[in-house]
Image (cartoon, rainbow, N blue to C red; front, top):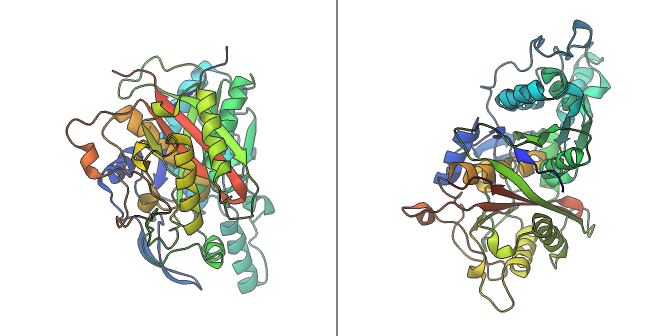
Length: 425
């Protein structure tokens, strides 16, 4: 019998909220204020979900409570500790501290692993070093090349909490945060870990923004997923983490117990950036997740869509949804309620899969409503769907017991997660 996987309350920060309560409120009310117009260097003015500077100075102390931290191996503070990616990761991790400390009281530090997902967390450090070189003809004295590799935030996570189990960085484009959750569950089920810190983080550096702009994927107005008038995505910054545990919480007074029921992955490898036009990669991921969870498609009560607002992605996702959730010749209204939360938090790249799983966690645990879909309401006959509206969260709302979160990324990296509420009281 395979081990069950339980998820702690999510720890997160993004432009729509500095914790899960703020983010869930924004999703219920459709607040898009976090996506503000910013003048992006060399690119012009665009809506971007930047996180403001109220996170503090970052990881600027030695965490002496962590058993594996010593003065000789303390986290590098002067250069890397004040970077935005590290400050965002640290702000989210502070919210996860109670869950990790509880795990450390049950398990040895070497039985607690880390799976971290990111598309790009090194260009910030790279640009800082490059600018210093151009201005002063020398790199900063405390700069090290390892600060700009994707796995660098793992140093912060492991040293912050003193965990020493297997540690992996996952980079499956914009599905990275979801892939990290899958890999963490595998570590537990394979017997390598009893608990795993999982999640993802990314910022919007000038390099990242310029890259997406060059792909003609960025909208100069608020993103409009599944609308006939959609023009592209809005980038956002964020971090989101869970602690996966093989044992169910004994006390969780404020929430229900949330379990990872199933996960599915596929790699259609159709194109470097464009999805396979027939949607079969997304179909395979969703069907694999349903099979893994031993569920029928009719049992899914809400789906958080990938929903980027780009022309090809939305069209392909709508087609895949119909193939999985609606029988032949049935109307799209036969699908379960769906929404994309990217118009609220932006497309947070490597954090997106974990942040959107966190939204599903809140729907299941807090039972206050479904995230509304923010768009202009102009349907695309080639990409129809059944979006969540504010009216659906009115009196008589019944929270679903099972949710799906989809991440369909560049390179055909597709991940579908299914979360369920164990105690449906």
